[in-house]
Image (cartoon, rainbow, N blue to C red):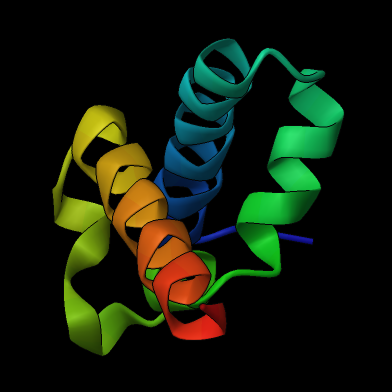
Amino acid sequence: MKVSKYEYTMQLLAAMASINIARQQKISRTKAFFKFMKSKTGEMLFDESTDMWMNGPDYIADEYRREMQAKRKQKK
């Protein structure tokens, strides 16, 4: 199965952002990856129309953190 350069970039960015999230939250990389992939931010990363894949992993991880903060505030 051939992966496009965009899909490869998206997958690589998801992995790199997950490493950033894992360090910050002190959780395993695997757990961080699955949490990220279930998020709206993860969904947006794999949607070519959002162009999120054009940003770096730190920006993407920060977007994920903002999303999670907003979710916590909504629950209050």
